[in-house]
Image (cartoon, rainbow, N blue to C red; front, side, top):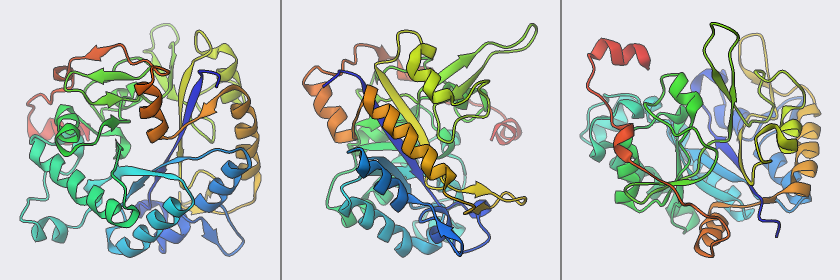
Length: 326
């Protein structure tokens, strides 16, 4: 073991605006008449290098296709992949909230003012996943990194030990209130362990604000060099980071047409991903959430810092201002 760890996280989702129909087949399985480039292809490429992905799977965004989404969870788990919880509750139909005796507002998780609402979302959808896998959910990532202190408290309350929500990019996008500018795991003051999104600070030109870019595949368009992840692994971040979290989506091997809809074009992004893993696995041990917790317990991954959760407390604002931020 090299004591240098990477986690490849895949937000596995079928959101309404990214496909015209057949959302799960197109945006998760990546199936199109001309070819296929989805989660099965990611898994196959990962297996070539002994890599398992963390598939943060959303059951909310295509709730009308819940059986199809459960089949995705089942298949990924059977392949030995790490299936964890992703939530886009803003896409749930009004009938869902009515069925459970709840208001459909606030819509976005970063606007939640009651811990109980977040607890309900986590219990309900983590429960559906565990029914399929027979395993407890160990980690959560909020859709679009929309979260606040109540989200983290809710994770503690329902027994989910890991949060993958910290993102300075999301703060700049007004999707959350606070994130610690670090790429190293830390512990919230309530005991939940935070595994931050790996991001790079970009200094603005004179008179312009700074901004941040994420470690993604395909590589972020905000970086000035290609391939930017190759440069990252070669000391772009100070000290050649000992811990890194990649962000992909289930549709990351696809392309986008003129209407912003996912489509299969060719295999070039699959080949690019294969090259990325070939390079990454030379420098890093790629781990799952269970392996992260085991390495932490054995002192191989150290989480020395504790951050006060009150820093992420939702502040009372006029409704019109909150809606504008969302």
